[in-house]
Amino acid sequence: MKQLDTNQEALIAPIDQDAMLAHAQKWSAINTGTANLEGLAEMAATLADAFSDLPGDVKLLDPAPVTAIGADGSEFEKPHGQHLTLSVRPGAQRRLLFTGHMDTVFPKDSAFQDQKWLDEETLNGPGLADMKGGIAVFLHALKAIEQSGAGQQIGYDVLINSDEETGSLASAPLIEAMAQGKYAALTYEPSALPDGTLAHARGGSGNYSLTITGKSAHAGRNPQDGRNAIVAAAALVLGLKDLQTEDCPINPAKIEGGAANNVVPDHAVLRFNIRPKSPDAAAAFESALAALVRDTQQAHEVSIHQHGGISRPPKPVDRKAQRLFDLVRDCGASLGQEIGWQSTGGVCDGNNIASCGVPVVDTMGVRGGAIHSADEFMIVPSLKERAALSALVIHRLASGEEL
Image (cartoon, rainbow, N blue to C red):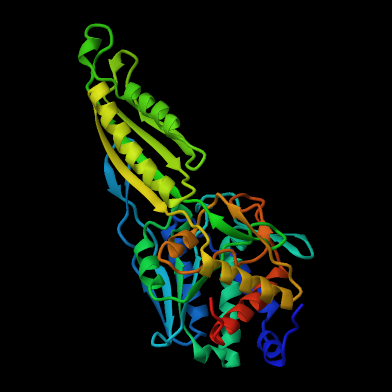
């Protein structure tokens, strides 16, 4: 195991576990369900104050427009919270990107609002692991880098978005713009396993709504004049399952619509999700879906409108990304942390960053588990552990480490 040198020891020495915990607990106490615009605004202001300790200008940017499909098939604009950005030394030759999200899956009326100690090292609370603890990790890692003076050798951007939990549709253009020209990126989702294991390659994800419009008729007197939208939706479901492959799981999730039992239904909305494991699988599905929609329209004499698509491209790990994983592992070894990784079917903003050609490790946040449930927990000592890990990785990159 390579030991820390004097500069590296001095770098991580000021990282304050108590201050990090105070931040994580304060932020967890603010409900930031993706649809809770009031809570997100409070959180954004609180984060802006905390990140003002770093050099550069903190900005709150409006979300990109996003539309969704209602149960009646109508398209409507879906509101989102603002995103926080910070740019430090934008003219530097080597620039990095650090990302996190302020939203959680727990709505404003969720019963899960409070924190509870499970034991001396484990704290249960909404968003502590996913990912308010992670935000504390990279804030304090960057403060350590700036305090050491190593930060002068790099530039970096910070993005904390408000809609990661619903696919980052309102922040995807911002992610793409901020990823441009970056040497590497770190994202602060919680570790894939409570032992600190990182997520490696990721599949992609896409959410779709198909609105089917048929023709109503009396179910007894003249059913032959109707065009049943529910039957067409069912045919689409069966067709989608026929398109499923090992490289592209498909999950038909919901059919909405219909009418009284004596009326041929003229309306339905089918919602489904896909998980392509490679860019080729994603492209093949899009082509097959177009053919399925065309054939279903002809066979059932209905019209079908498609909304949505692939919002998280698959994230393979190329040579440069693997070098970044190796660097994280080596820095962990210097700290006495054993860092491994495994592929996962889950998705995050790391997918979007990788699609821009930027090497990224996207589970640099705290150790914890049971995320997206009322059992979510954070292993508290991992705050300082992972901040030290990040600080060493950033220091190595600032010192000219090549990927």
